[in-house]
Figure 1 (cartoon, helix red, strand yellow):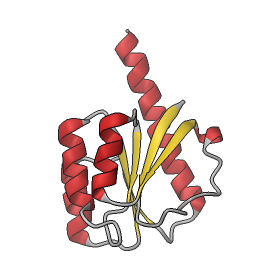
Figure 2 (figure 1 turned 120 degrees about the horizontal axis):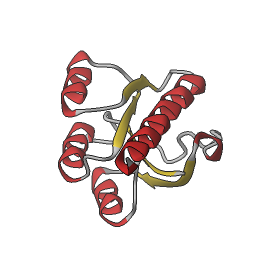
Figure 3 (figure 1 turned 180 degrees about the vertical axis):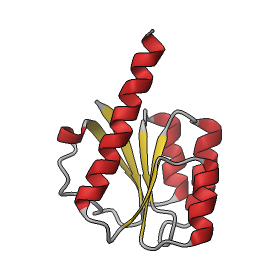
Length: 128
């Protein structure tokens, strides 16, 4: 089981997903960049679900900071709108997926399942 942080200005985001069935043990929520950095310093996080647009200002900066300090964390961008520059920057920094919030929960579920499988494979390879 893995720990997930939702870094999004909207605190009620995704309450109706079956997190345990997706392999998620704990969910931490951060409503701004400072809160997210504080949690990341203190709590174990494997997956970051990150909104890079308002009201969560500084999403790309947080992504860069996470890559520098916690390169093991897998990040899924989950934002209200796609901007080519943001997609390009996020890909260069390193993300697992980029989804638009209007995407069905099914697509988000699949993205999380892919990341969980990737984490499991990485863990298995580290044991060899």
